Image (cartoon, rainbow over all chains, first blue to last red; front, side):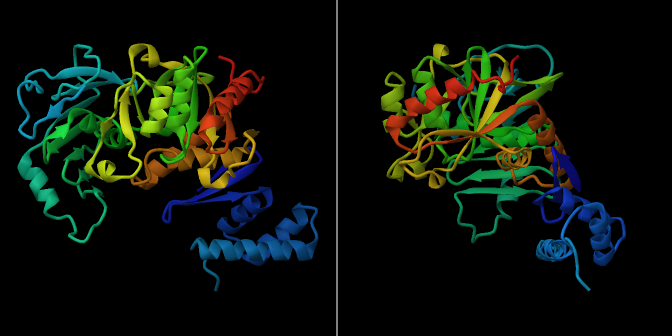
Length: 77
Length: 338
């Protein structure tokens, strides 16, 4: 469950009872991911929507996916 | 005051036919035990009933407690949605699924203030959450007609700071459990018991007329620095709802160096939200509906109430300066004008 909080968002995982603060980019990434997209597709969409260095975005996405994975919120195949 | 509640509740302390009525946290409480609060007789049903439970029922629950548990306070959510709390050697409670009934059983003869503090404090917080409220862990003062809450865990020094304010003439609204209610564009804070739980040296300094304090449990009695319960006089406490002006999130003592200056700083909305959630009673009731409600309640609160961080060195002599810093901050334009 994601709720907007000012310019940021908070993700609450109801199973693990863990909260995660999200900036606008990671909130959008989560949105894309949970609407059925792949990590690669979400990455490409963010690249189009935000003015960001591709390598920097790739690293941020990888780090975020790793964090989500550690929290049990995504499973990497 | 030195009242002992006998394990076989005597007629002197109980009234099985009608009970005693109290108003607390904005709710009507009917208690079988005569508490040391002002009795306010009322008609109709109470919001919460505090009464003795069937000993066999308590025996049945207690028989299932794992023998290896080490905490002197044991708590468990039961399969029928009742909550069981046991204070080893003192008393045990069952809180109904809807929060409208709190059953108790005395394990030994206990000090009435001890029973009352737990029944109307931590135990009551379960009832509040079950009733749909999101009570905060906050000591709250009335300052110029507005409530000012200090949010934080029980070891953060909130009560000591509250005692400093009381000594300076401000009135305590509640020490530990704060129930808020949203009213149009602001929140109203409700009064709790007129009690402060303090280290004796803090009480001697700020509440010299409050007596010697009451030991809450055998563990406190054996502790090097026990926190005792001190009763406030009517002039030191406030028993009406008050509009909430601001919430200060008290920084953990370990995060503040002794030589650090007092600082009051804004919190991002996300940090304000996470602090409100962290210091909401209580994190044992975590079903999805409650978690969702808690998050949404915190979002609404931070959108309407000024929430700032308060960090100060835990040096007794600096508490008056902390108070002055808060009073200055409350004059700033970002503080809710009600």
